[in-house]
Image: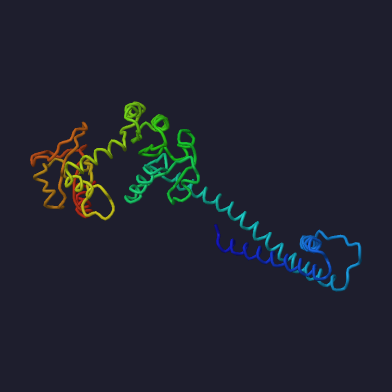
Length: 330
């Protein structure tokens, strides 16, 4: 809301109140009763006029003239400020909506997050930290009003709403709705609208995980199960659990995990892990290699051949991982 316009409105309303109070006091002092004085003041300021059985005195005429000149001016000023605030707010909403639509329409390869609850907020913050484009979809306009992220207000189970979020141009869909049935429905809709989507769903109940996977999700996360596993890990292997926190949380960390995909343009393809000397040249450490068939090769031996289609899982500082990416040619 425009603060200067709002300030003008409050000033005008205060001035109008002062004029009404002054007119009421003036007419009362000139001989009218309290109610009659208020009636004359209101009808004078609003230019409606009032009927008098007795001719007004000279003092009443002069006071009425002054009240008309001052009161009408203040009343119109207050009305103008109110209309300005209303029109300005509506136009601002229209322009903001158009700007948001253009911003979303320009996106491609982004992530669509359905559900703006606690989990959805964390996902959005992590993506924003890594500068990944995304769109938030939620049915509650008030719930997304406080976010600066691109948003679409509507029911995510509606195909038209998903299309408005650019689902057909997106690379991934995250569905963290209020219940498992809604997550399943959004998964079905997303898969039918974009068969190439990578879909991550949330399941509150264990029995729902398999259903959401059958609906088309690539991964299903159960926050309760993950929370339980983390608690057990902190009890049984606290140092390991805390180290994983260090390398997987974004805020204020020195080391982090990264994945680097090897394609046909890879500069290291054809060489081995040992001959490429990744550790010596970049400082990053390759923990595992994901093969094209989806299997993982952990702690790869020096003679392991690097080939297109593999994904390197490496750990290091941000500069080290950036150097690895440059060295690979990704």
